[in-house]
Length: 132
Image (cartoon, rainbow, N blue to C red; front, side, top):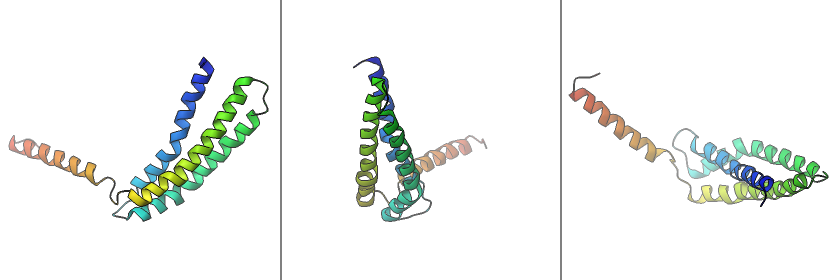
């Protein structure tokens, strides 16, 4: 691969995992104790339209680049179209099905329990030394 193709692939790797990260963020940050089905529905309803809009705008720009005379832009456009197609399928189908089937009901419970234990331990150590 040449320099431009390497840059192209570096950009596409970031784009390809972006949608899943946004769905995961929405899934994790639904407040309260909710079921995985409610969390998946929340992620789909709150992030889905934005993710779909991002995919449509990226794909439409790639379609315009297909008609360029510069070889790099046409190659980038082809790779961008393929990446967007796979990212949409991977995030809307594969990822959301997995969160709905196997996702945790309380995704931050483990981390919160560790933070609580550390906070209690540090607070006990400070109180034993007379610090506030």
